[in-house]
Length: 95
Image 1 (cartoon, rainbow, N blue to C red):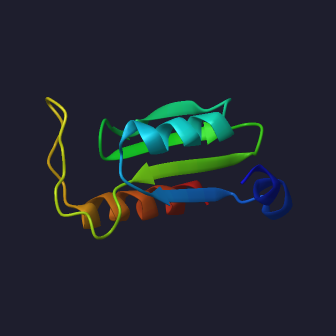
Image 2 (image 1 turned 120 degrees about the vertical axis):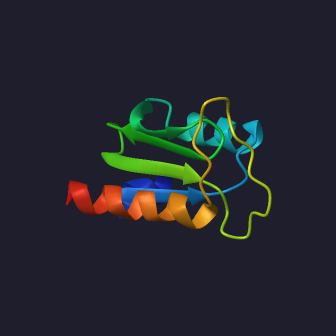
Image 3 (image 1 turned 90 degrees about the horizontal axis):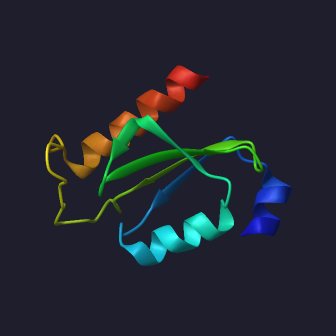
């Protein structure tokens, strides 16, 4: 993945995965300089972070086929589709 990032130099990356520690651990290993952007963060469902090393903004959210969604205390309840809409809106606001 690191070689792909250096070649492709993406502005944005959207990870659609399970939100378990396994996937987050791998993401954090690759983006070891990640900085969470709390403006778009829902503990289990949507995580926006930035990497200066790769000069990109990343989002990790639920897979489109996710059927069960876990919510943190005090988090709003959104559908998978709504999380994707939040990401698209955020990317449009940056460009």
